[in-house]
Length: 254
Image (cartoon, rainbow, N blue to C red; front, side, top):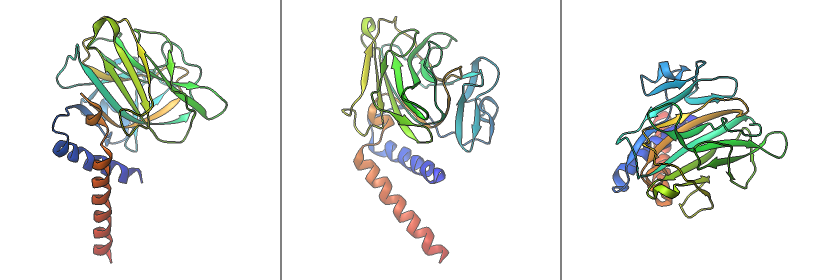
């Protein structure tokens, strides 16, 4: 089933190119590498910038674990992105619930070319009992999550997160987080920071204590919501194409 979902994402990406003429994608990854350390199997797409024990790929998914220490980043095209608006979409599935988040337990964020300047940190936050968590974020240079999406999530379930970083107003950078959105007007949480403008050049995954274990898949970074999330009409076209493809495959097998 995950293979079919990945195939749908490939078709959707091709559809984006045809239908979203004004949207720009700066990076995308479906993690369809062989199993192993991501810095080894990705062919240089992902590189470590802190820590040693690696982020691993398994069954076409990146596994970010509180038991390991390496942080990795991938280069965005068109870098650096200063005074820009960036969106990132990622699918995530926690197998181990995160603990109470601290200033180092983010698992996803944007950063510059260095090893310590981050923006738009995303955290899993343990809340109301075993297997229950929420997603949180902040818009500051560090610290624990300041804003938490107010819906419980469960381990073992795939969700879609969308992160927006708006640096067009340098004195009041704005970070916004959605979970399972269809439209940009869907419910979200936003935070305003007082950061110096950051020359964003990479998207990053971090491994740290208390963050649980989370699988990441189908990552897209772009300049708009439409660049990372297909419009409902696009998804209908993709779904129709998949139904036709599956029907054709069944006919050939019969």
